[in-house]
Length: 412
Figure 1 (cartoon, helix red, strand yellow):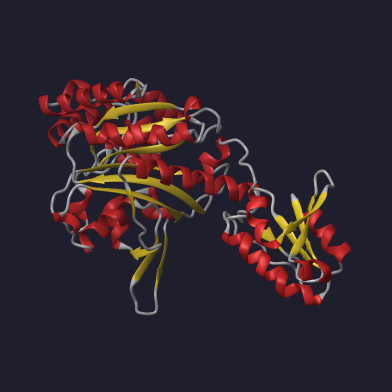
Figure 2: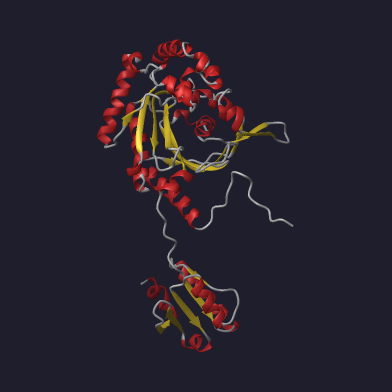
């Protein structure tokens, strides 16, 4: 019988890969907490409408990539493809729209049916932060600066570049949208099928097309900056000023866009050339209309998400845990005493293991195989004398140590 394999686009995290994955999540969690973000955990499955409302019925994620099914009760359920919508739904569901702002951190698995490639999987993992209930430019800048602080703590900030843009307010986008449609309509025949479909419905998405012909056309498209209202321009300039104060370098990229109407003002990405074509490691922006889409009141919000897999690929090797201490009973009668020693060491914060069976020789071989730094040997004579033989497995030195002093001695 053939051995079962993981589903295409998924993978097991074991050893060094698991250590890197955990390192990214734990580092991000620690930094986000320092910046005042509290961790939330929302369900992996949601009512499908959470995502059709938030991502748009015509987006690639909704039309091509979501894992959606009908449960036994006839409800349409979706495995979450992203978590911002879930956070906004949770804010409304838990009555927190009266307790703003809320600063949220999350980490966990997401699911999208897409072609697996380097750093991209059908089950993937993200970290993210959301500041919900703050309209000020300082919230945008703080979210970005917190992201950079996490990249810096992971040791990957130096290889990434922050690119930012503004989408303006609704009035700015309405005027800009008309100018963009006029420009693109003149080139409509040369646009890709996807871009032609988006031209009148969602023209900003054309600016983000990956089609080479589209990209050549939009290189000459107008930028939004001449169409900004005074209010939108002030927000944009203040965000840039705050980023400079935070010490976050950036470059303006007018082609960073978000296609849905509830996005506004700041849009940004941290990009790198260390991952080939898939260069974005962290992306986000302001989404002042999303909470309202979830049935809540109009609520400003800003945030970002980052792929754990991609960040883990950029980090260096993560050291394995400290080598353990091997507790080795000699004979069955010594096992009870060995268990008590094992428990005392673990309670003292010392990593300790004991083989479940085997002779002294076999247990010593296992101690070497697991990379133990010391062996605590307990036989009948040691138990009677209230001592254990402690052998340094690096030097071969061995000495008798009172059992009560083992935790203190091995901690040193």
